[in-house]
Amino acid sequence: MLKDQVAIVTGASRGIGKEIAKKLANEGAKLTLVGSSQDILQSAKDLNSEGFPNVIAVQADVANEEDMNRVVQSTLEKFGGIDILVNNAGIGFFKLTEEVTLEDWKKMFEVNVQGVFLGAKVVLPHMKERKSGTIITISSDVGRYTIPNGAAYTASKYAVQGFSGALAQEVREYGIRVGTVNPGMVDTYFANSTQGLPEKEEWLKVEDIANAVIYMASAPKHMLIDEIVLHPLVQNYPIA
Image (cartoon, rainbow, N blue to C red; front, side, top):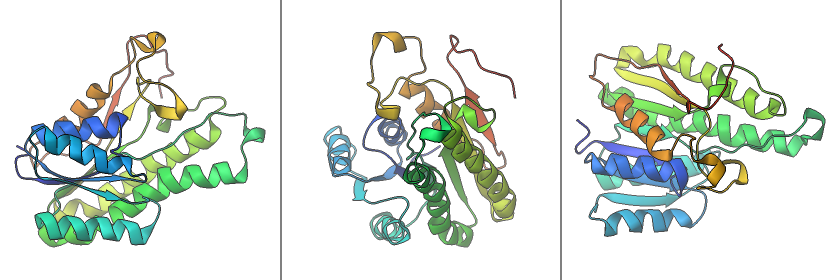
């Protein structure tokens, strides 16, 4: 169902974002990969070499409006449209509140919240004109409950949930769907960790999150999947 649809994926240099891009390419989508470092160029080359020619990369800061406008312009020039936005870029750190600096706080909200806002803002005029589109944000299970040593991160994910829910109501009359994928513990590079550690063997895998994105994006046009929450079986978590 995603063949020849055009998708923008942020934070696609590695981990969850790179796997989402690969799954979308396998479904026949055309892709613009977005990342803040030059690693994003290699991600596109990797997919090109695997037989997916309709993949480009744009190095950009998701918290910078000019950069994100450039992402949209590059996508429209190359592919002629935008069907899907996956807001995947995000950062996280876990400290006692008194140890969180103001710069820590600002950076968290710039990437996790401002980046999601700008991603949606720059694609919406095009999606509204076409009366179609899907915006999916990779949020977190802590967008629904709180954890100690994670006040800044939790606050940013609550903001993402609130923004996404309100946006979904604003744009549904235009045929645009907005939803979030909220994972628990995932074996990835998040929070300066290392992917593939033995202690993460039973955690969710990046493929699990990518599959959830494909499921959400592939839903029939009359169906809105507001939210997918998924956890590894070994994770204990409070019920919201």
